[in-house]
Length: 250
Image (tube, rainbow, N blue to C red; front, side):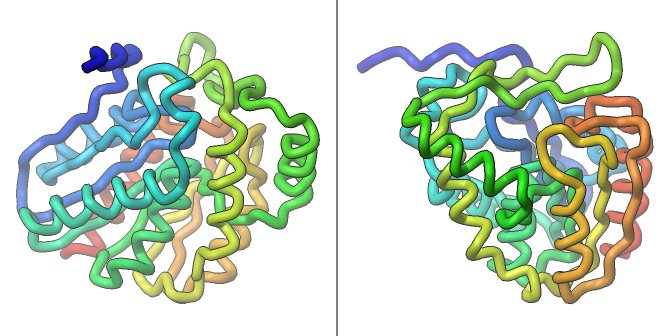
């Protein structure tokens, strides 16, 4: 039996047992729990039970991600939700980037989710930049391309993400966007968007705001890039999320 690949710094899954409200926190594509750890710890400090899982193929080496697909990540997110729901009276889900995609999907699979928090979520597969990227990647025929991690304005802040992007997993994620049933998201939504995002176009957040059926509160992260949870607006995200969780579960 081969030894397990060593985890990247801060990539370990994290949990905290607190009160009856559970919050599932989901990281993004090629990232790991390190990018969401400060938000998870802020929620735990507010007294909540928090689960921050490590998605399949993430947090070790990019080669481990090559065989994984949307079905693997969504199954892991669903299992993490159900485990948390089994221990808590109510559940809120929060996600960054692809974690936001998974959060939206979870809200359609588990309608009893009290609310969702989305930080620069990927939801719009028809955006010109996304469509062009997918076309170029298919034409290249390469298994790996340069990475998308650590898009952060704050000097000295670094995301622990893969230095390369696995193409087939990315195409799998893009294909899953077509099956997102945003109109079936009926719970309250806290939508936090960076106007200067070099990974996910802000138009993706606009699509979410216009398509979901539940009430939407929008917050602009004017000083941050894509990984806003590690950027200048991290404290604002934490404050708004803690307030939102209290409101939707109160």
